[in-house]
Length: 257
Image (cartoon, rainbow, N blue to C red; front, side, top):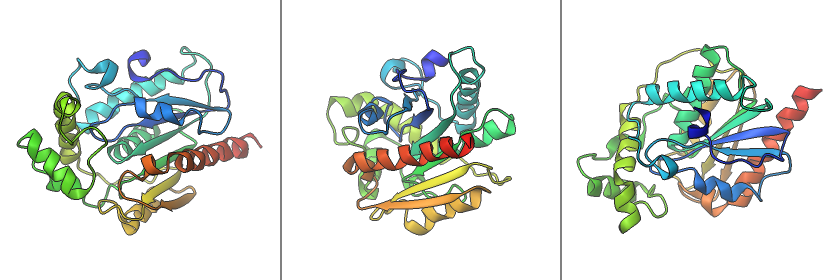
């Protein structure tokens, strides 16, 4: 089961794992570009969601709770010792991936499974605040692309037309539907440190909304901003990867003391 959900990893890195969840319409391959950018010792594990790349033939989820339930089971199998050495880990998500990462961390806590050392949420305001994605018209692929372009959140290669955009249209619409269908349910804050990252010109995730993630942890909360819009993580990939990697390694060191 875990083989379907997790991409190839750099097995030589043996200090900590970093699981990376994609944004709407995207796959896991882009995170492979972080391999030479992360500090030594971090095992990068891109998360493969249905409906894209190696799982293109599988229907994408439109219900977040069902997707999170499947992900939690895959994570539990990763950390029961049967899939190889058990390492401490962190979870990173951008935009839709932040929402998935947060609800996954809550599901892991509810199941009393091994928790992450760090939750990194990027390019999305806190889940108890309304989301700009709700304004996107899902009636057609064109309306989805137009809505994302209007919000400045058109992912590279996905919404500008052409063959790739056509291939990914169903996945993109499903991912936006997943966000539309999500309803935040209040609950106890996580006992996990949260690092929130924002683009200072991201209209869908203003600083006040990103800072509001602090409500969802009893642990340490940090926030960092980069210049740019929604896809600042592409424009500042080396800096983002280094920030996330060092924050995660700091938690490994502190738990080992």
